[in-house]
Image (tube, rainbow over all chains, first blue to last red):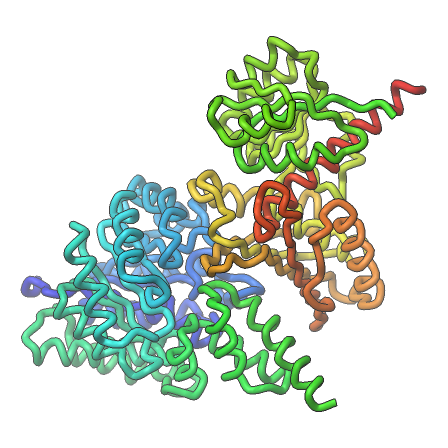
Length: 341
Length: 294
């Protein structure tokens, strides 16, 4: 076995990346990516619909392949890596969690909006009962003051979370803001602290390093930036950076680079970059999975997608409210019509 | 016109809001509010308004069973299991506002008439009361293969009971979309939004109709008619925009503003439950009174 790991990485491309490709993963793609990650010794691999278990819907996008088949496929080839699943209470239920566990998922990441941790009690407790490792995932962490974040993280800890994550779902946080959040959590919870970034403002790496400096030991990344919006901290780059800093991840850099180049790049319809839409997500503080939906709505109503995203930010829309996109787009289009007539 | 006597079991937010609504009913006479905490705001208000306030729970009520013929149960799913049993033994009709669902699911605008003879009926969930009328409105003119609803409510209006068992909402609502709404397959999603000031309840209803059965004009008309029906007992229920049509997908956007009786106006999700409860009880009562006069 390898040396003691200082940081435990979770690869999220097969979950967060689902958003970037409109939930079109196939069993073959998941098998190939999982084999590569397992071979590169990545400790955790998250597999699910982008919005977590049971996320396949008209609201968020229907999955091409049933996620349970994807989870089963991933688990069948991961003999070193552990398969993780995401679940958002209100979307997924204990029923799906149980099914995922029976197919080989070993970690449950239970996600709520940063102020709503108490809806996760049931799911964290049940995942524990199923023998899974548990993570409390506090999304849209920029939308609450630090004290609130701490209070909510403590709730998740009290429900049995082994780790609590600060999740910058909008890619909005600046390094100092990440620093103060991780520092506050390290001072007040006894469990592991993790960080999940989005690269919408090109700050994913800087924010991740700030989090690690403050004591975060669980870090998410997406290979080739295959995640919502501009993607997450690019896993293979992070492995290289941490290696140079003398921080052990236990992950094989060359194998990660090969996986990124040969297996993951062809999955992407176009390379992940910071487009004007993803930049607007980070600038306005909007949930990263809204990007493709806003683009579609903008086309349908012949308006600028940035106007939709900015308006959604103003209205303090939270993760999961994709139905607001069309609603807001229709409103903007009607206003525009009025001005013109 | 004579009235039918009713009592409310549970003196929390729902029970107290019901109390205020029942004060306006022309066919129901509220006599008693039953709680377990004599100091609760609900029981205090009940006393102030001149109702009998019982603080010893359902057993206390059963010592004076003549107080009511219909009982609203606004306690909890767990408490309802016991309440339902003893109230049935005492020959009372029960309107179950909890997620226990011992009796059939009833959506006030859709299938109330089928269940007027039942001893115990269940009001599904707030999301169910708000969205199932629309699923039914589409389904009655174009068969619905799949219906999915997204209910977004303000964090402040989601009580500890809902939060501790949020799966109950998604599962009960999904099943009722099928059983009452008529969709072949149903799915429900709930989102809590903490924005201040609190947002009104919003619901988005997606229905996929059978291939070749899309009929925009009839669907539009059916949705409008159904909106009027729901509005007749929930005045703050409205369409946010015209329905959207895209292939065989119909999308309906609804907003529910509460009446602001006991609960604030943003809590349209709670208002639609209590309003539906009163509506169903009134129909029960009319049915009972009609039988008496025959």
